[in-house]
Length: 268
Image (cartoon, rainbow, N blue to C red; front, side, top):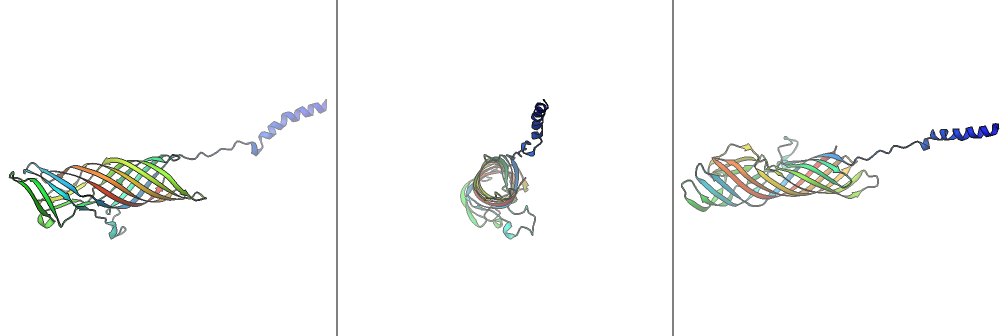
């Protein structure tokens, strides 16, 4: 009888002991985050298509078009970065949210502080109407000494809301270095700083909301330790400016841009 009682007691006791063993203790698995934020800061350079500049000055009776004008950028960073304010050269930033890391999908605010200047020392065809109702179709020499100057030099300023798709290309065995390709597409407003002199009449330089733009971008991104990355890319942008205030009137213009960008970023 004592033997039977001992066996029953052991049967009841061992399961309780087994629950205390570490190998049977439930292990908490840390769930990997499927999203992150990032910020990138860098600098850019542009080339622009030729374009027409349409000018309307009803108060003085001017309505004309400058045809096929040539413009250029003004990099600023080629004269040094750390010897001036970081926001004076043509800079770029991206502030993004990868909301689905596994599928490589995200959105971002994409801003390029670009500068556009109608090149001086060029001959421009101009057609339309001047103040006395006289119709013209002639050539003018575009130069500040001749009363012509046109700057979006404190910014042509492309602002986009982008959809982002990330495609992995390579990762090392330790998974602390990786290379990705990113495709981006977006649309948004342009916020130019308008400064000009046309036929010797100057405007009051100012920032304004001045139209819209859309862009496509392809970037290569090299990431170290899942935190810091170097990103470089190319971008095509089409911008339409309208209602740009000039002396006694407004101007409108549309042009394409080819942009190259290089920046340093961090995942947050």
